[in-house]
Length: 127
Image 1: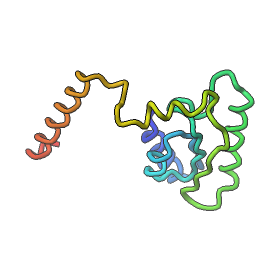
Image 2: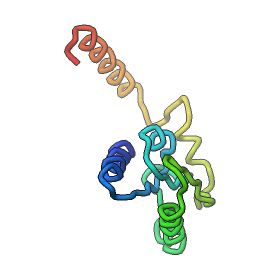
Image 3: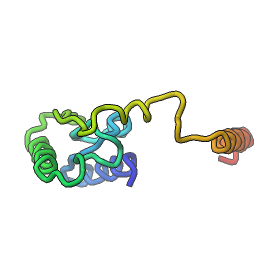
């Protein structure tokens, strides 16, 4: 499930009296959605609780989230977990780059065509 969807579900639950904590690693998206409590882990997407087969690390992260749920002093509270990714920070270079090495020329053309179609439909009032 994407970060936006989870964030909006958390807001809905909170509005109906159910406290929530998001453990997430897309801080900008989750904070933009306005979740009440976020435990931010600076790990690659899809791995908010850390690397596989590390139950102690995962337990620590979940315990931090439960502590945040108990001790948050106000809305939109973010706490950053003190852990680092086990293979270093090279994963950030491939994600936060202008080159976008996972995109080939054909997919770039397709994306630009879809973007132009959206602009046309918006100008015509169809979206």
